[in-house]
Image (cartoon, rainbow, N blue to C red; front, side, top):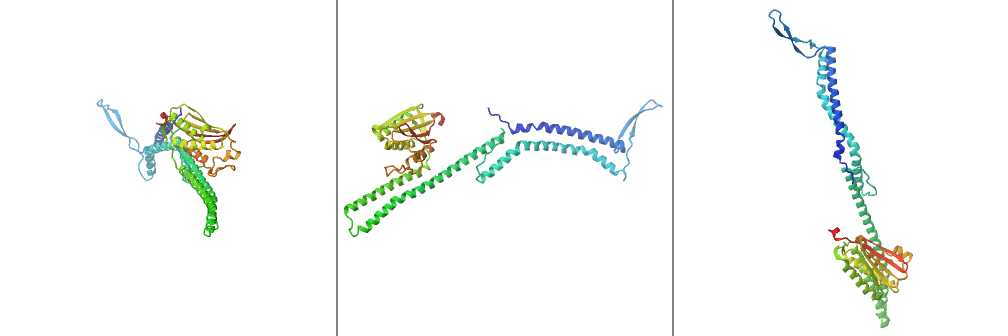
Length: 399
């Protein structure tokens, strides 16, 4: 159990100190002023008229009479004026000194409380807020007391971490988009140059009938091939741009139905080469099935392109995670591919498919990350292995 000490109770520790100082100081002031008055009177005489009554017995008629007795007063004149003023100040000093002392007794524990309990966290929070305002997030807020200000410092630290994470993600996204745009521009040059060359060729020779119909049809076919390539390329780039802003549509889905869809799609793409194994400890999950199927179709299509005889899939739903692992019995991934296969526009040098732009695994990686999971590329003993993970939730946890 986390121990929490409120500032209110921390302040209560200083109340006894304040009370002890107040009582002790008040007693000392009262005793001191009274003692000083008595010594002043003994030394210089009485400065106030004290009337006392003395009982005297009458000898004549055996009666008792009250007689006023005036103590000796110091006469008020120019010489004794300062003595009278001094005595008056001493007489009324305690009425001023006692309230002042009580204020001091409140102030001193207050200062101690501020320095011990408030000054450090307030300084930390002010410094942190200034750094956050200046977009400096590479620091850490540390304050270990379990009180309200400690909770506030922890909240500030969580906010700082989230801001730092968001900033890093934003910069990563911007850098990745710049890299995509750069690669996109670079890859467009080749088909555009080819098309431009063919167009200039036709413009030069067709008007004068210097080219045969067969040659012209061949050139047109090649131009059409480049146009188709450009269409596929722009479609892929459009898909990538859309995925950066996508939000998964999490819905309730039967695990058995999802597994059936995966089985059916795998058989359709791979035919007799396909085999699937699955396990699920949940009957119902929350997940975006369209995104899952998009990743799955991409992985299986890649696997069947490189497989020699078989493509196998393991599907596992456990501990709130959907894991899809696709195996092929091809040559596996090269060392470079293991590092860069999920990067945009990565293509194997021996890739025969001209319409393969190296965006498939990159798109799969983006989708997995959008769904809280990840994509990993590995080799196994008989070929390549790609695993896609998606975070899913039980019904009880999602409500």
